[in-house]
Image (cartoon, rainbow, N blue to C red; front, side, top):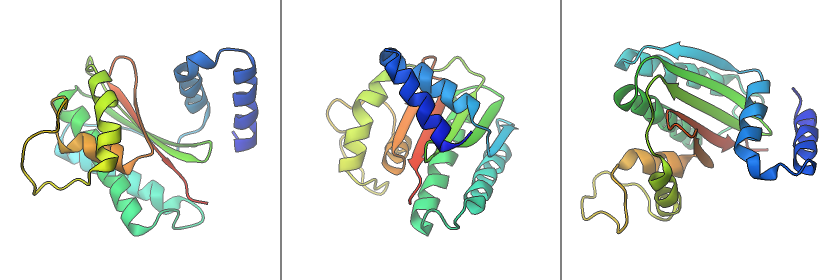
Length: 181
């Protein structure tokens, strides 16, 4: 589906007055775009690496090449690997990686077969904090005030991606990175 058609769909959706249901719109929009990769992975270290390798392959196929500089590409691969590890270690098999380009942005969606978790404390705290404080795993010290449990993984996801969204159940995360012009 072309970007022009997607923009027309968005304008129609917004004109319908259903703007408050943006999560459903995004999900429907993503569903209609053909994936660049859609792979089911074992919930193992090998499965995680297979998913990361599939994502690297997608980055290499983007035109014009390279779409991201080396540091940005490495950061994105790290974020996808982190999300795959979270699904593998905290969720349940199978793990699914689906990558699409939607409205000029790369969307990597990782889904696990688990029952999910309550992502709201994390989405309320980590985005602003992680962008204001560079991740440094060598620095140990007191946790930031109001910080929910969790560690460097959340910082990496929010720092390296333009958007991080979970589904309501908390067993699916979509990492969004806008494509450079």
